[in-house]
Length: 405
Image (cartoon, one colour):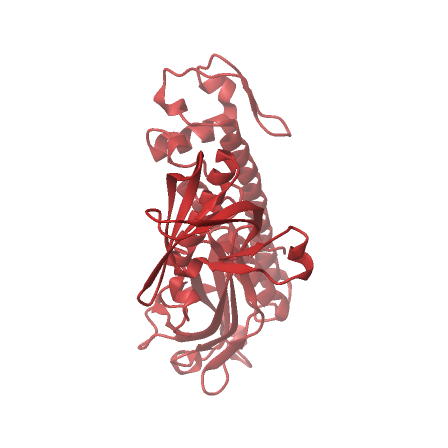
């Protein structure tokens, strides 16, 4: 089963929200069910096999405000995905019940464990999609901020008590890792004699903002042994399908990702102590796309003489590399490098360079303060440079604990 890697909802920002979350969600639900009969509109909305199409709608009702065609189309796609996941969950329940009633020794078999694992994945996917939609968040529509790729691997869990001590059973454990609509699940494993479980694999979360919270959930599948001998003739033990239960959870965020050790919050009443999770978490900052252009660079004090020099500049990562000609970018070292790690502000200035606006980059390192003026050829280029530089400066602030580590 494929992992959900793309969001089914587009966040249009605060201006696109209706007067209340309930009204907005109810409105979209009605659109998807039977809009033409249940809503009074000046235009029409049609729901076919393809995306929704809407001509015009009345502005008298505040419930319509900010509901865009893109929002409705995304909601339609998300509804289809939830429908698919729901059908998969139903089929898995039928499979589990059929195996329980018709297949000898099904409970505890590999097929049973895989069906249980797939049910957990499908159920979590469905809930995650609903949460993304109703919260109005998405991992694929994050604009104007520096994101990161987060990789979690070397997952190990220490179970602080053995299930066999509490009940004569075998326990299989699996971990679910999820962030919004990105969901992963590990294979089911049993602990060793010391209570340790190693979960193989690397789990990658791409384009994650700095305020992320990756949720990690621990599930257990307990299999009680079948009665033997004469006991089996009088035993009518039945199992409530599915058997897998959520027993612990924790979160990984920017504040604790360097700890490598996480305490799983206890969610069942069988444990006296919480389980522990260890993991290797690596973060690779994803800077904006490379930005290039000619800049007239000046170094000095605005109240004194400023030396200007026109350079071909390349903004890559958090550095601006300066060349004399564009062709030098491929085969020569840069003439000068401006590190934005030392930049504390980027301000638009007037009348520093004749008849043009400039950007003032104020640099601070130890006890030295330096002012660098960069002047694009047009106001449009200046706006683009300022937007990218501001994004990087904010990214350096947001991800400072990762960058400085």
